[in-house]
Image (cartoon, rainbow, N blue to C red; front, side):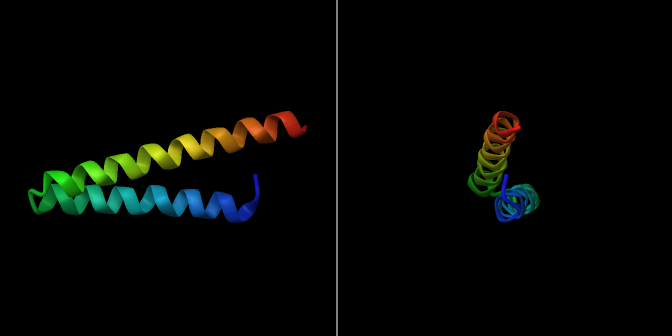
Length: 57
């Protein structure tokens, strides 16, 4: 996995956690759900990149 991809995916995950926390703190269910979705998307991307890396070696 390229370093840029790792950083991008991790920052997306962190952004999702922040968004989820803000949504929870402000009682904004939609924002909280968006944060969870961002985290899930990021985790799936990271898993896909790990699979690609495994086949490269």
